[in-house]
Length: 325
Image (cartoon, rainbow, N blue to C red; front, side, top):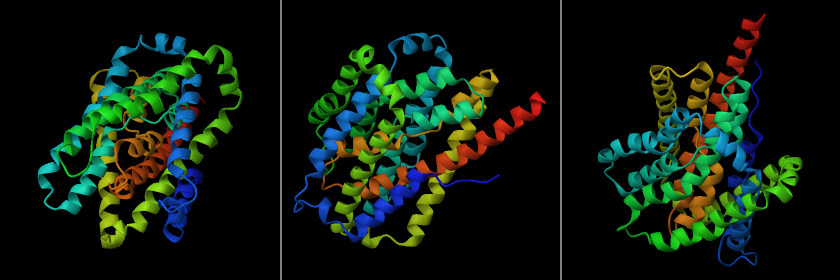
């Protein structure tokens, strides 16, 4: 089987390298305000997200409530609990920054597009995947800041829940509601230009990643981080993924889910959204916070989940074809 490296993962690596060599545009001295461009881009991402959300599909999707409840509990409860259990092991400020990065990863909603594509390839419950991936993003608007607020409030970082929810309301929730309300007029446009809209989403995310890492490189945040630390972070991220994947699979079987629902439970319940992560990091944390460090576990997890789930989904698809013959 020939494996392809995800082009978006390669784009992220290129952008981080560009931020390392040319961090100037991420600083306050830059003539281009990336913060304003990023904020407008975020609002447009979620406006188009609302255009693609079908209220009818969401209503119909509620019927399989056991699957949906399982996926959302895995996404927003199981993930964070596993990370919280490890907190007593944290002894230094540097380790605490990395731990917060993992906690941020754990508190995020599931990804949409890759979950649905992989579930479809593995012959899982596609409608269940669409519902869970879509509703997860909306739930995350409320849940992710609550989880992070528990561990950041009272620290030296300025974390004002009131102003954060106002930003979330104006930059994310309001555009989603506007998009849903305009769906009957522009919904077909969103479907027809889905590839272009996906490219736009990724472009905004790459812009935010550049801003975050450029600022971190300029502030020399990564100077004390060696290759061994990065390797440890990679291994811990890999262990986290496999732990969630096998736990969700075991519980889904124990609950007597159908084969299709088991696939959806595992594929959707183990994913985390890089789109929401980069967007939320811009809103949740001030520029004084080491956002580059915060995003690193998420970006490693993003690459891991795409690679491993692609391999598993491809294998399942091949097995399905063999069974049909």
